[in-house]
Image (cartoon, rainbow, N blue to C red):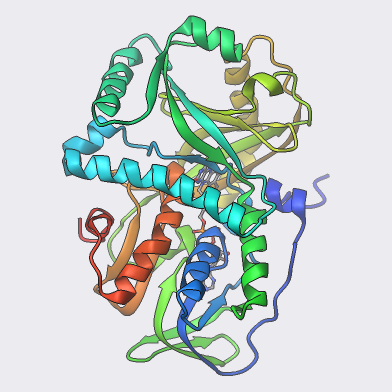
Length: 399
Ligand SMILES: Cc1cc2nc3c(=O)[nH]c(=O)nc-3n(C[C@H](O)[C@H](O)[C@H](O)COP(=O)(O)OP(=O)(O)OC[C@H]3O[C@@H](n4cnc5c(N)ncnc54)[C@H](O)[C@@H]3O)c2cc1C
């Protein structure tokens, strides 16, 4: 008998770290941030720091959207290889977007240090391996391309991969810059610190209607009003329901985590690993010595079907894992599933939309949603200041 539906891993691990009041009066502010996941935590931090009177509203508990389910591999390599991205948006654009990813990891590292956040953040290298003999050639071209544009990459042979990581694999690209984090704890910690500095956070507050005038008026289900100059949507993948045009494909992705003290922890603790397969497999260790494995993506149809197949998908991930690591002893502690959005070029949507006056959207997409959310901090400030940034061109809605 299934007594209840399981929660996403990070929520289970951490519990609800802090509850906030729901909105029970009319209020005014400079900027209203809708969405209290990792994106909302970062954007509201940047806004508060820049001196904006900021309010955050979430219809759920803080961090309990995708942020509670994410595997939080922080990589500058987006889902679209740099070679392919350059064909789509030009080499200059591809280099800018890839470098922005590297900057994001460093910005997050600095933020964790300056704010003294206890969020399992660890700098790591990133290894992308070819999944087949046929895939080696394309990956090698990708390596050459990244090297040509100054990225810090190394080509690893199967022997080196086996020696360093006990992994049976085709060759791969080792990148210096990567990291992992407990995104749920990070968001909670950052909201907690900023709420002590004057950030007003309201959870369990659903929105009924928004009038996009000057000012913007947000009306909650309970009839209270938030009157503000601008609204920033950090509402994750649910946001796509707002638009007439289909900007993203929603994918179901699956993850499982081992018991603590996985036997290859020492070999794998400083590396993020993923392959070129479709659907891919990816993995990383956690700060409490587990191995977290994800992938097996399928198009999202409905939540019920997705939840039904999650155990099967976890078995499949572990079969793949054992093929790659013949000596691994992976005893599953937990598996879960969640949704994420993909775009045709692997880039996010960050910026304004013609149908929503005075609104800004920060929609990190693909396997790198979090690094895109970090980039959103600076980009939102630039939009508010009326300044241009080339990334706003690459991340615009009408591309
Ligand atoms: C299994 C899995 C693995 C992933 N792995 C990675 C990874 O390795 N690396 C990576 O970078 N990304 C990864 N992602 C993607 C990553 O999780 C997301 O990019 C990130 O969590 C998005 O954060 P967010 O704050 O934008 O969205 P969310 O965490 O979903 O937060 C949005 C919030 O907005 C609130 N909200 C929505 N609509 C409204 C409304 N109308 N009114 C009020 N509140 C509203 C929601 O309640 C929610 O709390 C993964 C995702 C999944 C599911």
